[in-house]
Image (cartoon, rainbow, N blue to C red; front, side, top):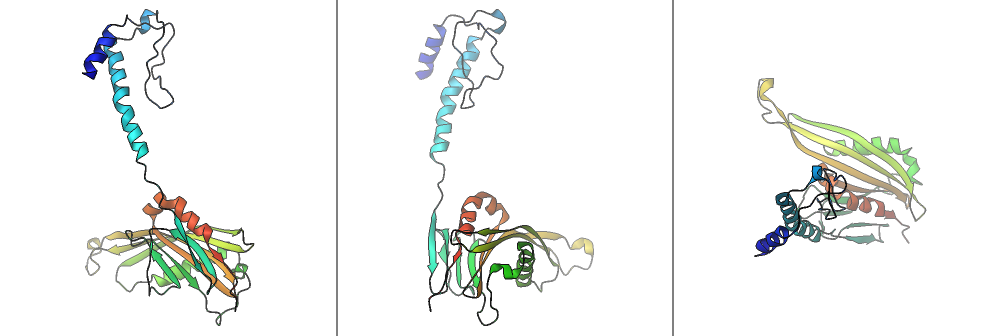
Length: 259
């Protein structure tokens, strides 16, 4: 019925010819084609009634779809704060992540759906070293090398045919709102494994990518101890969640423990 009414209205209009040139790609602020219904007289740019009707209907049909996609954009899950006043640190993490007990770190939380995505906090032993400042690690570049070396040591594999590729993506320092200096290190590590590690012929041992992850560390010093917030995430997930994950890294704080 709507189509018949539209056709009736268009058929009742007089022939349309423009008084000025109509750009071939006229777009309005939303990026859709528009019909400039003004007084037209130039014959060279006459708009056929069939094309006018097609453009009118395409605008009518497409606009509700665009509104629908915008209305159902998925919101961020938000962050919640974890405070450990006994050990002297705090940070924020995605509110839908879960805490895992017995993971070896002082605290370990992870995404319940992406098991390779997690956050942990490591604290140095007060008896093994006495840190006065994060600058005891040297400049951020030197700290980055130490962080990467530690990661590679932890991921060392005894499997035949496993190879790791790594690179330091960035190192930086900042003074947070608590007046303390923090170092931030970002590294990428890829793991490759042969699909047939026991094969005799080299051509039968084809290396394939097992995983590709980004590791972000924030380092701070307090209570004569070195604190490290670690965030692990697959590279493709990091691209999608970078804003929230950087908020997590920026939220890390160390604090004085009252004895």
